[in-house]
Image (cartoon, rainbow, N blue to C red; front, side, top):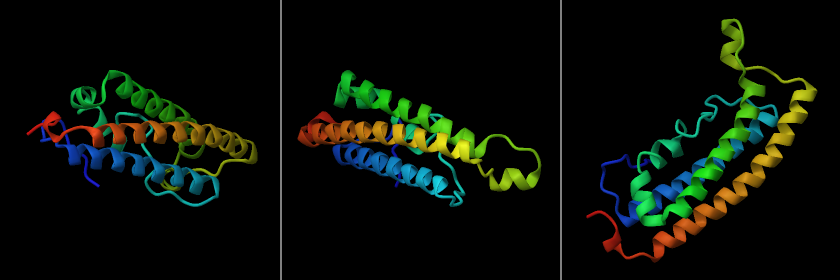
Length: 155
């Protein structure tokens, strides 16, 4: 999936594809969290910062276009739940990927003890709730864009 960067032509289908792709990317990130909690190795953990993740790299540089098309209120809701997702995810990331000493431990991460794993599972429940709302808001944005005329978008 490729996200458009600010300054590129942003047609209706481009914006729809990008939003659908962003939703799919967050679903894949939730699968990574599930894999971590099930003891599986995750080679490329999700970025902790909302601006550094794949969605954020598209979303924030295109802020003006998104506000123009979606409206400020819907843009801010997307941003709020995207930020909440990353704040909750950061807690899980800290459990599994906090700074370690030595080359071997840096390469493979850390196995959490049972208390840390229980905390991570609690954070995952909140992350699921936030994700459901984020997906709902993304679906609203997708419906809004779908209903607009192509003339509202850059030529």
